[in-house]
Amino acid sequence: MREAQLAIVAGDGIGPEIMDAALQVFNKAAKRQNLSCTFVNLLAGGAALETYDEPLPEATVKAAQGASAVLLGAVGDPKWDSVEPAKRPEKAILGLRKALGLYANLRPVEAAFSDEEASPLKKERLEGTDLIIVRELGGGIYYGERQEGDEFASDMECYSVQEVNRILQLAAQIASRRHKKVTSVDKANVLATSRLWRKAATAASEQYKDLQWEHMYVDNCAMQLVTNPSRFDVVVTNNLFGDILSDEAAVLTGSIGMMPSASLGAGPSLFEPIHGSAPDIAGQGVANPVGMILSAAFCAEMALEAPGVGGAIRDAVRRVWLQGYRTADTYRLGYTKVSTQELANRIEAELEG
Image (cartoon, rainbow, N blue to C red; front, side, top):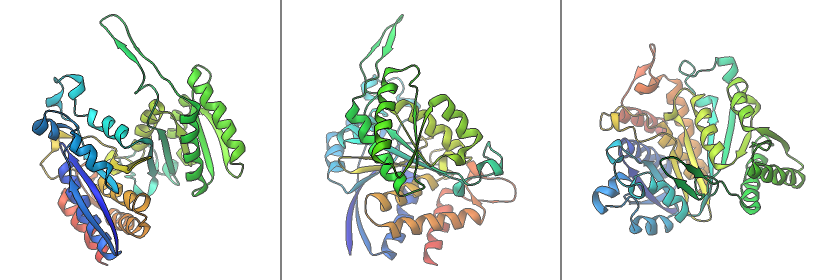
């Protein structure tokens, strides 16, 4: 029997309830696929602030570094908005990324997991969409030097060619296993860092000649995601552009509650849904757990080398989705509204079949 240890960071808001749902489904699939997992529960974000007076305790970092992978629910709550910036719950995410050496964030967007009635796009425009956004995660403007005052502020974006090459290589490897197309997104007509990015992407296209490569300005990409999303396969871009474009792409499905993500690097990978902690609905049993459940499936496939577990979870989610079961965020007339727990139970039951 294969064995793995997962670090579990449920976090704040709806984090604990969607994590419970995900682990319920994951455990069922893992057992049927002969995968044995132990779980270590860790504190981060607001939950850690309440106990340790810091958003990312050293004990959490060390345990995460020793795990096979990390599953994260969500962090943050408006009640912490008044604390000093260094203690904001969101600092836990940046700290974990740095401690684990994470440099790439992957966000898949599939029409198969979309709510056609809630999507801003017509069915025929969304049909066939199956893309993944590869976002550089360890550099760029979020980590650059900054100044902030009452009358002047600045944020510096810096990239080395090594950082850019690393993310381009990963994007090429992913495209090689998919539909063999890479769209490199930049703003090379304005930004020096983007010109470095484009030069590196051009060199990568010479190395991976079996792939179709294209350069695209970020503003054009934002438009194309809405007007023709099925044209994309692998989209690779920097930290800031990737943050914005991946949130835009997530809306195409009709609910950000459906979307998983993975962050990869030198150490254990981190898997989390793309939505926030939604404190306004925490504890009500109405949160959509699908993004967390699919993140657990992503974890099985990419970190635990258990594609059978991940595939089984994804298939079970798809079947329940097609049967019309919906949490409040995606409920429409004609569907069956269920709670967080009821949806997890339905998906678990599909794994029995």
